Image (cartoon, rainbow, N blue to C red; front, side):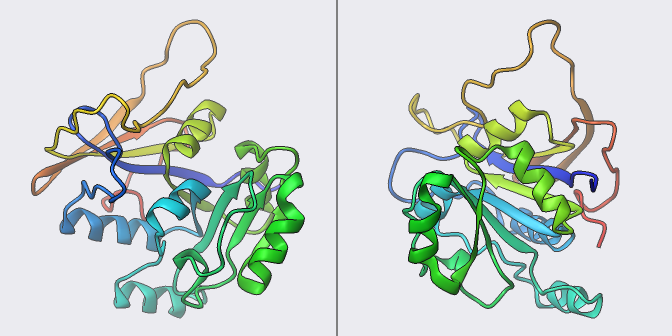
Length: 237
């Protein structure tokens, strides 16, 4: 079996730990300089994963935006953008979402068995729908991505997916950006929700880097012995 992908969790939070607020409009916490850093990290990955809730709420493209980075990937024999991946338990994804557009390869949808047939009918040729069992489990998804040649995976949210990856213990690196904003809403989503960790002493993550990026701060934490230190916030391409 192929080794599971090196997995980077990437997210931005407010000063009070929120990923977003509770309005219908997405709260952008990063600044342009940090978004460009994230673009560089994306360019160094083989796949980018978000949950179906993020697809429905934010409609992200999950694409490498910088033309130079896209060209370098193509020169290396890669697709311009890493493979796009999402997880879902329900057949509610729509084929006109940005994750399925743009001609950037064949997106993967890991789907609960009960929703596979309806999701395949709904999405058609827009994506490959993978039967992930009764409920998609991130350990199984990680192993399946490895079998498909994914060596480096970037996980961008939302709260449920971030929680699942942390809980499963398959994260090698956390890239956490803290923005100078207070959301002040107890109902707003946070980095994790009810993470069920093994009982006993809580291991302390290694703070590998602190970087000021204009008005935000990047904190890089090593969460496994496979952590890769470099000067690009996680990218090696």
